[in-house]
Length: 329
Length: 189
Image (cartoon, rainbow over all chains, first blue to last red; front, side, top):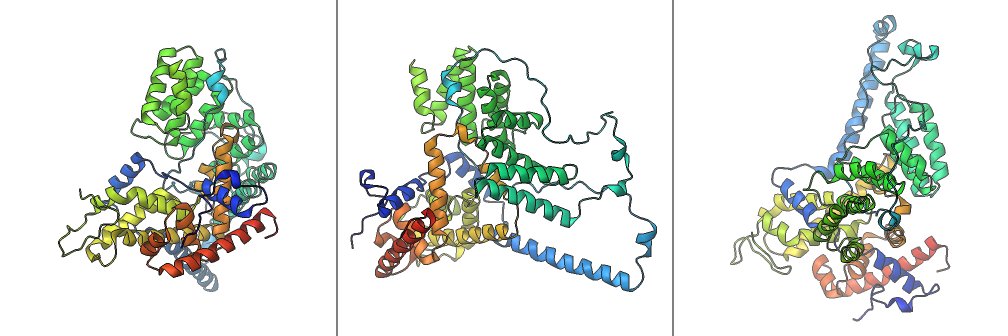
């Protein structure tokens, strides 16, 4: 049987009204030739022999355990109440500070592709002035050891600021999740920002998901074209050049380069390129971004070295044509 | 290292050497990654999936008797792992967990991303939104035919279903895909 693939139809046949042509166009864009590069495959291979984790059932087991604990916890409280043993709790309220709730670490980084601004490559700019102090977008967090006088309202006894219980974390997760959906599924960055403002108002001091909220805010701001505010946010909270912070750091470097702050951008790109065993989409962006910044700052030899390294390390990279063209010049 | 061809059938006690995990990984990891990416779509963590597939392979390798081709065996494990990954993803969403991977993936500044890349991402999301509404048997053949670009015979060999059934499923899958796609795009089917 001979059935022509939609993805095999020549693009010239596609028109707005041709449903099969449109399906072919969509499906062609969904084809992934090489989802993982050689270094990622090697990394997985290295982890294979001594790692045996029962991943498929993990979430189900965790959820079941949570339900059992919740129910048994409820049983204990009910029994204690019925037996009249709840008095100690009433007499001596707990004063110990709750342990800080931190989000669970990511299992893996997720590689994403993006590119530095074209302007970075093509339009040399003067040196950047030193970074200006930035206005905070949300109420500042308390910093240990900082002798900032507190308003009276903040000197209230600990009981006045309730610790985040499980329900508070669930509420926070729901709010951040709603902001994410508003942003990504409904494509409504302004609506997402409103939800994130609500999140900051309610959980700014105790939020367990403040990192996720901040990350979502950065994306929403970028989608609104508020690059200055996005950069200010990234400037306030320096991302680490490891794990999930790499993507943030690459974005910050690109935004800084775009804002003619090449010296600071170089610091971000350098940090990302420090570990030369990593060779992913972020590394690619950082290497190309550093070349562009170095070229802009007049370090032609260093820029050329970066471009040559880029062409060798990423022969099928998204900037390879531009890198080759720059080297030819 | 044992470099197996894609169609080689190793047997545990026969003349062909028993495959090692290392050899299988080197010969097939990239193919497994591509299968996983196509079957799972943009929400699947391909790195996790490949890792899980080869954990299963490592565990079950001693039981592999060579009744099926090695690629068929690997494909079926991949399909099960991807299906498990998709189930977990749905559960996570149902529980309203914050999907950190999504947050990370979304970090690329749109202004700095080429238009084609953005279009590609949106198309991919649309394709998998539509595919997710198809029954598993239809989704599978459509993915293998259109994205993996396999022939009907190859699909039959890989999935273990009859060739005639492959074509029936494919026709049905294409009709459903078009209908769902048009519904998504707000066009009459």
